[in-house]
Length: 470
Image 1 (cartoon, rainbow, N blue to C red):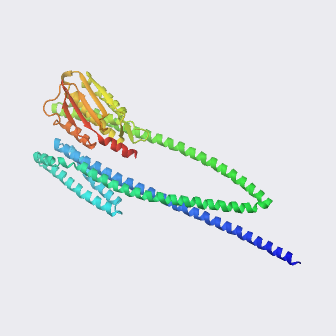
Image 2 (cartoon, rainbow, N blue to C red):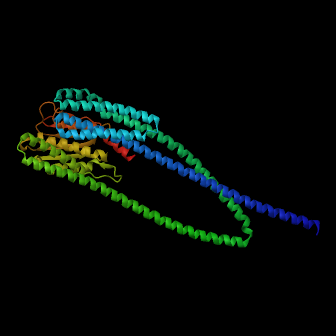
Image 3 (cartoon, rainbow, N blue to C red):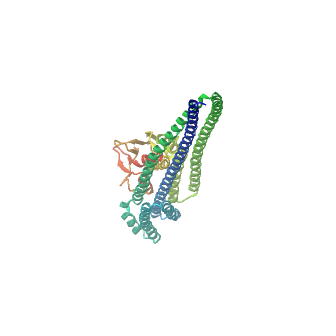
């Protein structure tokens, strides 16, 4: 054997060894890149899980804070109702609301115990609420002791404090801090996500490149190439079948989600309708009691209660939510509320009710409040502005003012009212409290030529609608 052949054989063996080593190295690098891509994907999924957990925690804190505000409003409303009427029936809702306040505070404290700053804020809120509830309790004690004048003085001394509004602002700031932290965490997670996605793409691209290089080296072997083509065809069929299966599954999931959305919408509409029907039944029972009552004073009180219960029933029964199930259009449900009043009010035979409403989006939780406001104001106008069967017109409008803020107005061309229009009975108190819940204050003005106009701005309805939509 010549030296030339020996050298050629050695060179061939070295080349074979180098090719085998290169293939093994390419396979090892490819596997390493795939493992890195899988690890990055796992980290990405964990980051998304943390983000979802933060969002759920923020919504939990927000819900507890909102429920606390509602309980405070209910306690204050029941306290003032008891002061105005001395009716023992208002004590039970007052006590339930006070007990609910303690429960809501405990829930809010439990939700924020892991955050020292938020926990300190909750402690401060709890101290402020303790002061407010103590004053409410003192008012109840004075009324029970027949010291109504002192109770009224105590209420007047608290008028400028706006207990619920100040606490609402504090709670909104509290939620805003939580949202700010959530935004910071989301920003960090988004940045990490971009890096991880980039790493996944680079790793997969490297793996594909190395696999391609390995495949290109084996193309010289026809049999291996044929097997590769056959395997590729088989994988392609499996992939197409898998894609078709996934496409069908996604379509079924979409149809199921649409059916569920329609079912939830129907349930919500049915719930509102049932609430309205139940309240209408209460209104009918009050009407039956009214027919059996001989006392004029009791008849007046029962008629007022029946009208207000009917207004609440109408607001619930006529409420139609939008596609998001969280908002409603004011022009749709307020037109329906006016139709209910016109068909049920016995004094409205000679009175024309005119509605002028812009399509303003209102949060679902405040839509019934707006409907009750309209019912209260229109009923008062029908009752007091047109005595002895006198005819006339009551115009109800909900439009934006020059600054873009929604404004509700109810005007009549009746006989007007003597004295200060804003210092009436329970109806005026109810209108003022409902308006305050929506950030407004009622303004009473005598109209030229007779009649009365009541107007109030409602900035709160759009704030609530925006937060619900968000």
